[in-house]
Image (cartoon, rainbow, N blue to C red):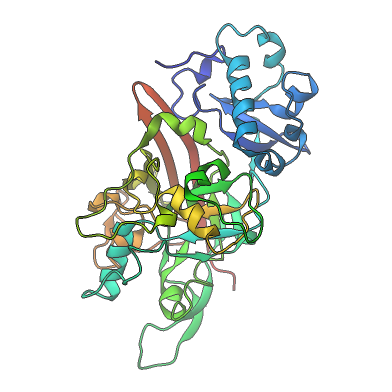
Length: 412
């Protein structure tokens, strides 16, 4: 049964009902404040602390990092107090109302200082699709079903939803009979991903056990890992992604906690018969996935409304959140509060669930027809990609808001 809030816009809100209360950082004026989204409003936690409504001093900072560092217990306790303050019949309603800000008036910022960023490749459907384009006889490499594959990205080029970026330039080689050339990417793509933001870290040299991994997770966000496929094809051997990835990565501004996602947990992905079981350090009986729908739309300058490109589900990931965190630290790597771990492209078994244009247009051979009469195999200048994510069950829906970005022309 859905909870009821005295903040009327929160009741049955598509993204931010009382059951959600995601954390974010916003600005109205000069100073950044931590807040939670509730319907069409933001509860300012900085001023709420100053008024004695909450006791968590970390909410007076300009980023979420200190609150993240205090662990899931602290954020859970704070969330419980916020539900109490915002629920229908709350005794402090009049005091709390003074600290509500319209979301339309707020500028959303990155939720935390992201010190490090790692991108995984956790969808077997995506890995198989991409592999079959380049290695039709052997799409999955031998290690895929044993080890979560990932690479270290670039934290400095992560931007918040709504931030436009310039088309990257780089080396490409379309014809093996001639030398490579340098210029703007002609095969720019999006990748629909889910981001894991780390809360409490671990000491250098001290791995996180897979059964304890989720206690180190502060929450989830949406991620668009923009990719220059032509640059990537030329540069990725033998060391993997580099300039094809680190020119921009867009994340949604609101961080949805695992507490809010708890009602939508499901059994992890069912491995095919004959697949190897995860090694012991990646396996425990309580591991779970999340029933999280993910939607990607495109809007070109000629379109009046966006058109959906794909819709997938995070439950289809071969590797779970706990496995990604445990594997990342299995060699003693130290994660820190605010570090971002991305899932890799979320793709399903159906064509409509493929989470990138590379897959949807099958490497340019199956162009996407748009209502404006345009066609797309890869992104053009002026194209805007809008991503949304939500969970829904028993009449309750919580969402992540939007993760959107627009492609600007390459700088000359």
